[in-house]
Length: 251
Image 1 (cartoon, one colour):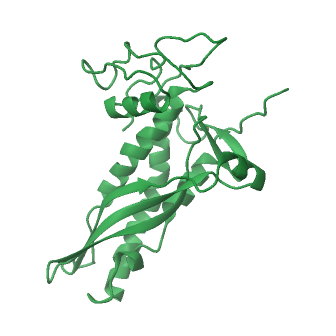
Image 2: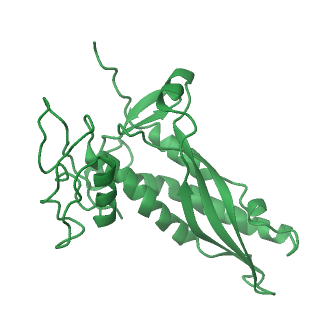
């Protein structure tokens, strides 16, 4: 799980450059911290002594206006680790008898958004990117394996300015709790909540794949025919739509 992601903003204030901008991004892990550091153009923190929590020697913020690192961090954790855990939980998916077919999710990747932020705002669209997964289908009777890439849909993704744009409306990533999700939401990272929100749909997708397996023989079965149900994009968008709307900046 992502662990606790606590508050703490890193911002350029009056042109001054502040130290310790990663102090609020606890428990993200060395890889995610390094990614966020690269994204925000800061020196990579030294996390060798305690790679999951030592952010005391973080570098300096050099170039983005009002970027809050923990906000980017919870999405990066979900994208890199939370999604991987969900796919790993499904593997392997077999037919009812477990003797004929097996499907495994091997890897996944996000594409680049097709529309820019301004187009999404103007046209009332969602700023999103394609999510594709590489799967391996095994015909157990012959041990034949087939690997292919399957589109799982277009998933809402954050902009470089740490906001989502859903149906043209900006929604903030800077929230550590969602009302009604947990009795003690302060103890949960937003990435954990998003992962939990997506899990039921992923389980239904696996069940649908299993139910479709007997419908095809070895010659006609393909991963694309099995993976018809695409719940992930819808689950992410439904979750993001519960985040607070970004108030317009007053002139």
